[in-house]
Length: 351
Ligand code: COI
Image (cartoon, rainbow, N blue to C red; front, side, top):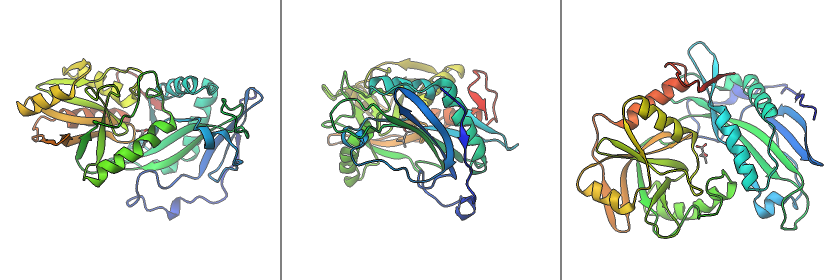
């Protein structure tokens, strides 16, 4: 294929209209987007153009069968105005893992990196320097064949859009441990970043919100006994001085933040156990005060502490920790992402 990306720049940037001190996550978008179509078995017409609506017919397969996957990544600016991505190879590999599971054609590596870096470079003024600031990058693929047979689409659209980002959660969270609804089932698509995994969470999360919770902690779909994820994040538990997180099975997303936190914890002498943890074990640990911390980890939310959890009618509140692992790990992670700390694993990627 011809990988050469056509670039059409906007005539007038929207950046002056944005109040970077006052916006919510994912609500405003940068000046440009990337678009590439899969037609006749090939990815064609890679184009960076001004951010704008796309035109699809009502019969487009994504609108009927939800054949859609996405990624979440961020660009960071350091104090010298250099822009960095964090482990983009991981997002590239995962989007194609998701693609395979959702019967979507894989996207070529070279074009992914070329599109990503070119787009971020063009919109680099939108990446702001400062605490909690970054630019969220959303690559995604949708089935775009105009036919409503329930079969994989023949045509697809791969796009990347970008949005300035700030803190996703501004306070510690109160969560409800699921005992009825599930996020993912064994043999299903939980490990893929499939759009429907998120849509399926909205209703149970709304029910939890009506009861005053911020998020749902997902448990296994068979028995609701094992702790899996928290909202749209992976979840970590600190019992005594050991950090525990669930293994990446087919129901758990292989989070880039998750795997980075595990590595940073190990690098800093924190004992990590990747193992299944039961809700009962968690409650016992909370009752005997060996449960010190719970936190979620994800690209959008970074590291978000959970202060309160409820299972059925039992409510548990965690104490403040002077030596919080969540705070320490977050500060090292963000330090690496923003070029403040040594990157000994080669995770940073200069744009
Ligand atoms: C991310 O952290 O990138 C996510 O996927 C969360 C998103 C649904 C806001």
